[in-house]
Amino acid sequence: MRSCYTTTEDGYETAFAVNHLAGFLLTYLLMPGLIAGRGRVLTTSSASHKMMKMRWKDIMFRHGYNPLLVYKQSKLCNMLLAYGLNERFGSSGVSAYGIDPGLVKTDIGLKNTGGIVKAVWKLRQKGGVSPEIPAKTYAFLCGGPEPPKGLYYRLCREERYSREINKQNADKLWELSEQLCGVCFKSPV
Image (cartoon, rainbow, N blue to C red; front, side):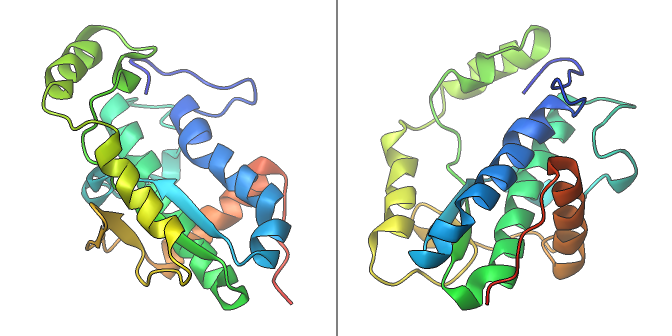
């Protein structure tokens, strides 16, 4: 999360690139192994995804940059990636999930921020949980012999997710992500 608009060397808004495109590309690179091992893909989302709609006309927030909206959209993208993976690769044994770790007591919100963002994070951080608490959800989703059903989890329980998580949005984001990353996922045989 950045206090002001920044881009990667490719010209993509930083939070969108780091929080979504990096995971999309990594999943693409790992897909043969994920299919062979009936793997699970875990994305870190947030309840914030429920309060956001995709900003399709300005997905990079070039106009009207707002760090909180950028964060929320990136978490919505994480959920759409998990949904899209299940749609495309679920029949080949790959399972994908969005995880809400809740507010965790770390310094992640202090990196590359300043002003109001930094001040708000320092206040909020005090009410967070230790990293061991959300780690249990990641272990739960990875640990069993059979992948759990569902898409969105918090505290080892399935949760409701936004109505924005749908095939239309997932397909649109998938196509855009392939274009921006210069890749094309192959359909499972």
